[in-house]
Image (cartoon, rainbow, N blue to C red):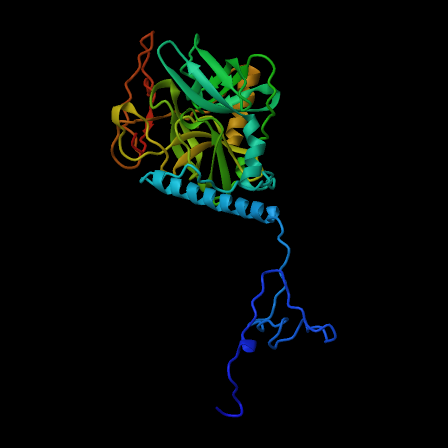
Length: 381
């Protein structure tokens, strides 16, 4: 046993006391320390980590949960819709929800000198004619001139004859009956007077003598019954001899026409051919075609249309309105359409036969028959 040791006795044993009782020290000794780390009544082991003060518990953030729920609902709804579209989309590429942007508003006004501006000026004066006869019917075009009269082609109204019916349809979709004032088969011009008041404006007549090749022109009419049709082109040639109207008989006409490449089709007959100022320079009357047509059908435009010069139409119209007939100059030449050769010629001069006087006088040497000549056209019908 060393000096540092001592025997373990009863006084060294720890004293155990019942709970709630504290040992009583000497009355005169100091009180035990409450924060001492040593052995003793106030001893306690040191803390391993810093003591963090605990916060008081609060309720849940309702606004945050609501916003999160809305976001989740939107995302889920979008995904569900997209999935439904993918599952139900047909394989043909049809998209019920497809849409294009709406067009922007554009002005419809055009300069007066443009084609659209001239057409807007001319169209109210152009009419469509529906003609019915005893066994035939047809359609054509015409235009209003001074006094409410309408110029058209003779072959348009010839179907009506004496007891037929003519119906005028205006650009504003109104219509009225009409009667023939006069017609001239030799020039293929006719004048029609509508029943009642004509509200359509008159179309100014130009000067066909001032037309030159290359001038821009506009043809207006009702081809194939399509009223208000406008086509454009140029003057291709002048003084073109063309057969118009009927091919034979009294309706046959040979005109010195204005040729144009503006599209002219069956139904355009009688409509105006106007210049860039909107003045009438011709009356559309005929077209050239290539080859024959099947089942009697008329073929369409190939860029060769012909119009009666307005200066000739003006003279004929004035005479028809004032007298009911038109004067035609004749030089004793007729056309032999059966001739297939080139150029023109005259038949052999018949030998003059002597004439006898009633009193038995010596006959004079003069012809009892009138010499005739024939002009054979190089064109084939």
